[in-house]
Image (cartoon, rainbow, N blue to C red; front, side, top):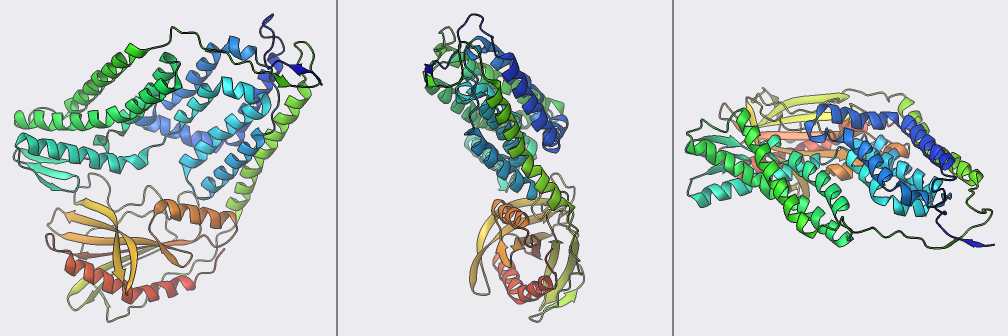
Length: 519
């Protein structure tokens, strides 16, 4: 057994590379075909959302980054590495769970990880190390980050209100809504700055890779590209409010609202890149690693193709298992679903509707909406039952929410997970405060019931349901939502009413679920 260098001689530099490259490209294209619905789910978001439209550019940029390193990569001896199959299998399991739980973002991340794992398996660890950044850059194609919208809205509202108060302008705030003497404002999703943040991080990471050679400098600049747009967006929001306030609400309200924002963001990014250029290192030559390895069956510059072909077939075989199992899960028939029937208990009686507010839960297999009354207290109960989790009929879905943004009649002025007492037991619920244009205010509690226990955390609920579905056990779930009126900031009476109603009615709700047989 002879020790041969990990790199090929440079005369000619591309000798022996065409077949391995062709096999790798073929594997990547076949994998994309196998997981076409997952790829298509990314493309659909790129097409409809300006925030993620940059996704169309990520693959071409990654290809260009690899092409820039073609001379260095051509010196590496492509050699199959079956260790990549372990990562491929792990990514496949993650994709299966994400598909079972209809979590598109995780499925898309797993798809990209499978592509990278396939490259590792077919071409080897040396190629993976040399092309590490161009391959990792593919993850920016995944349209993710929407979970940051609410936190970013909170940061923007906090900063804007604090700056207005520091300026001497009186502010009345309720959630993400606030009023100043010149007018009323609200921080909506478009004000969160997510679009600026994603654009900044994507450009910042690419700029850091191209401009610096030290991974420390690259990391520091990438962190700056994450932090700066958050503060810049908050400053942008304050600037827009002040322009409108000082112009007697004549400026920064229409199209110029967005123009000012993008101009300000552009200036901030130019300053960031300009400051970062003082420490640039792109005039330095990147070192080329050439660690010796042990190999057998290879002579001269020749490359044994059989192991590469075998690795390619194994990669396709491992990756193809998961969509086959997912298709089988999807083809199973739905279980019989009886109607939801909840008997009134604890002195509660069915009553007339007392509110025009309607929660937005979609795709439920069975739904019950009923108002109850007791001793002058009114409570709305809505149950949304999902017999099994599937696309368009999911207990946890981004389209399931209290009220849509910019609803003309109702506003969500505060939502959080809180700890309450129900029947002497401490537990968590999702609490929201709804404000109607007619002056009515509602205190709302919501939780999910999965595997005979309450679950509030959406991520945990998704994981439980996905595991249940993959393990072929009952994967049904129920959303329980109760609401009662309250006056001004007096939550004590409303909280006590909801706690009493939940304690009285939950046994009846549980019995209604027991009538349903699992799939």
